[in-house]
Image (cartoon, rainbow, N blue to C red):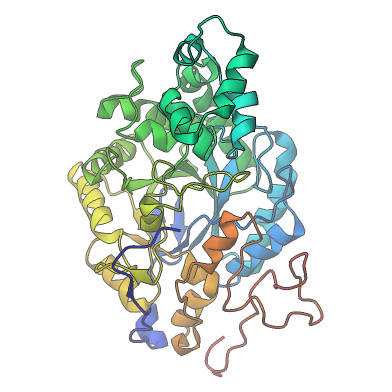
Length: 489
């Protein structure tokens, strides 16, 4: 992953720990309405992909164990990982593109309710993504993937040569000369692997995305409701399809790009279709980018417009993130796929303890505060969720009191200690396992390995009842909390 050149080391702070009474009187542990839902507290575990589904997208016992463990910490809400809306292979990522996935998801929602004692609401994040291929070996790219055309042949000195001869000559060229003959898009496909874009309207399936996606999202949301989820979060963030429609880089000329209104058109049409499918009595929100953090990308001004538009469309919550784009990702090795969290925008999404002067904690707060202010100025009270390096009570409470957000999300700190909210509420904050923000977990995610935390994944390995990764080296879920204080229950 990319690192800021300043390379300033930061340490997370525990901050002042509240007493039980102080915690329970705080904003963080107060109730909040999310459309038809009421959360018991303003704590939120955002979607994280743990890579525990089957290869064909079904819920497994490991998925059940993972989310049950978070639920025992009793946060206000848990958002289940990005779950694919198409009925297509996507590796060990949960899917919801067919009714056959509903029984497993019903098991999951029932397990979360049981594990939390009914205290935690369960939502599911649903996502669409376009095709991306692994970086090819040079010869394979030229032989199998490159479309040889008349311009290539003319540049090689004979417009009448066969495609096979042209490929032989292209393969024999030095790298610099080959680069000169390839288009910018072909150079990218060679160096990074081919990646579809929403602007590839020369292809029918890309051209028809505005016709296809509202129905796919609506059907997936209806399945989520049938599976017993309390709500749905539409994934409009990072490097994926809907975020790409919202991007300033979306230059489509069919009314679904270029202007703010055009870029928001498909996301808004999708919201309308999903709302029609699930009804007004069902919680519906989205996660979108406060800033893309790439050259020529969307800024907080764009996000403020989108936030107000989404609230006007009737969403029940807005959750912000930042960065995580393919456009500045690190070049993958041959045989690997580009990963959208390896460049500067990826760092903005998941900053680690080595940082610049701004530090890794709360980089999304100022932008989210501006988005929330725009939503309020437009006349809407839609609750806004803010995440990004949140790891102690003082930080979370300040975000709420200063109007940055209405709900505080915490991913990596919750992964480090799923009980941290519960410990705070019980006056046992000194027992919290504090995330070190080394991004050990992100490194596992990048390799599509079962995500764990280095602070707990070696504890009790080999003990009876402890489920481990296939190699037996890491436990799959954090140890259970055994309160050391007699008044913490």
